[in-house]
Image (cartoon, rainbow, N blue to C red; front, side, top):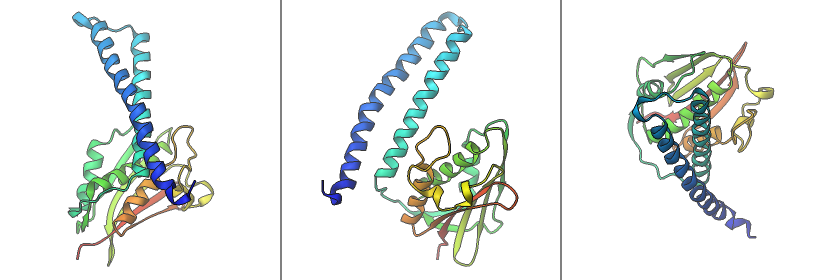
Amino acid sequence: MDKKNEPDLLKQMSSAVSHEIRNPLAIISNSLYFIKTKLGAGGAALDPKVAKHIGIVEGEVKHSNDVIEEMLAFCRTRELKCAPASLNAAIKDLAGSYPVPPAVTLKLAADPVDPCVNADMEAIGYALRCVLDNAVQAMPEGGTVTMEASHDAKLAHLTIADSGPGLPGGDGEQVFEPFFTTKPRGIGLGLTIARKYLEQQGGTARAKNVPGRGARITLSLPLSA
């Protein structure tokens, strides 16, 4: 096979796999809803064991859909829709919607200047969520995550630091490699996609260990002129 055609073939394959898997997952979700409705008819309480296993199936359906979304985001070229945006708003919006586990403390550090960038904030929000997911998953027993907005003379920065074990081997580049993961589940594309979205907008994504304990990932974008 001609290597020049590999990217197009990968996109076609991902779309086909996505379609063939998404449809059964949608059917499973609808069937679960029907089952829960029938079992709970008349206000009846679900048997705890039945409720537990329904919850397990729902969790696996969500995980499968998340994997599909990562595959598509990795394979497809995103059509950017850039507009002036606030970085402080980006971290506040994510903090307000993110399901933070009870054992994790999420702290925000806004930039007093509130730097403005010209960016596709839907793509940046996706990238930021990928980084936050990575930070939270690095601390299964709990810890602290800090999201910070800052800037220098040319760039605006979104930084997420955690109190987890830090980067494997201290290698800040390895975590951005496709399919690299140290987690028992996941396909290792989240941080790859985050960097991809930043680079498409003239930005960068960097990772390094925090002195003492933990990791810090910084997403940087050019300041608006």
